[in-house]
Length: 241
Image (tube, rainbow, N blue to C red; front, side, top):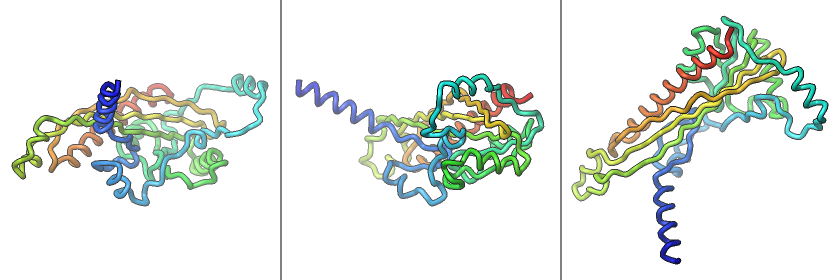
């Protein structure tokens, strides 16, 4: 039993060693491990916005069954007027990524907005954000979140390191990466909202030690391009009329 337990633990440790913590799309720079990543972070990234704050969901309200029924009766599908002005927010970023702006700009007027937490009082963030949008003539708020998840598989060549340059120039690692997005659409006037997630995208790449960071960031850029294209296409198709 002891041998079986140790074997299971060993397999689990190997599995964990091949996985890395999810990265926010707003903090997607390369790091080889968690400690380096922590040191590489700058004051520019201050964390994510909370969906609860953006959507205006009270944390401890005295909600009755009648309130729930009334909210359901008054709920209506969120729509965006074609050519309308939208306030675009990328959670955690001072400025939304350009491909997202470009995709929505096909049918909408896009006003980029700061998505860092702490810009407003947390308890009133949703109303303050809607008020800021209203003052800018924006009828709708589009806020999105995203994470990058990756796993790494060592290739046999990684262990051929007895010649100094071999470990640097021979491809020795296979990285699989996935991006997942969540997008919220908020009607500024009513506060009604909708949320959807486009299909995740996956990318794989083989890299060598000297080019690891370049390979990683190339994967990030490919995934962002594909995910943003799909997200803006779906949003324009489902919510713009």
